[in-house]
Length: 195
Ligand SMILES: C[S@@+](CC[C@H](N)C(=O)[O-])C[C@H]1O[C@@H](n2cnc3c(N)ncnc32)[C@H](O)[C@@H]1O
Image 1 (cartoon, rainbow, N blue to C red):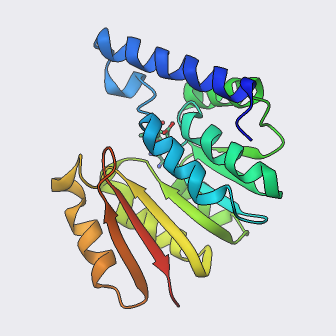
Image 2 (cartoon, rainbow, N blue to C red):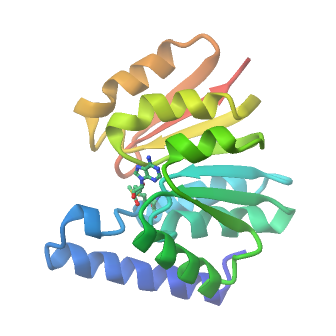
């Protein structure tokens, strides 16, 4: 599950992220990865599940992917990550391979609005972590890739409350979902699909 290879890559990515923030590297050039405790939470969601399929919208350099992939690998799951920045995609491939998780995670490079409609699979868990103004449209696309019982997780709903309060309100008002804002780190909206 969380072996030394995984832990070492996670620790390196955390150190690189902290260093880039300290140096004031512009956001577009940073990994913008989830906090470690959020990574642990994502891992916890899928580690007990059998054959779990995760769709990740916004992969960056693979930090959250590594948590997801480490979680699903015990019980034969898979992760599909979407990323449109070629530099991030290159780093993603290197980091996921170095963590020894290449067998459990694939990268689909390109704009999610173009690549996702071509994906034929159905997923158990979807993670939305791309640009905030795109969450609503990404949710709409992801909604067609899940069945009842699936979980859709959106990050940053509290750190970017102005941009995302409408996202959370819409999910919580939807009778076809049970949706809860989890106040962990930057805030996660967890939406379970009922029908
Ligand atoms: C917040 S970062 C993701 C961080 C990552 N989930 C992690 O925790 O390690 C958002 C990423 O989404 C990517 N992105 C934004 N819009 C996208 C789109 N339409 N299609 C694919 N990737 C996109 C950005 O290039 C960026 O790398």
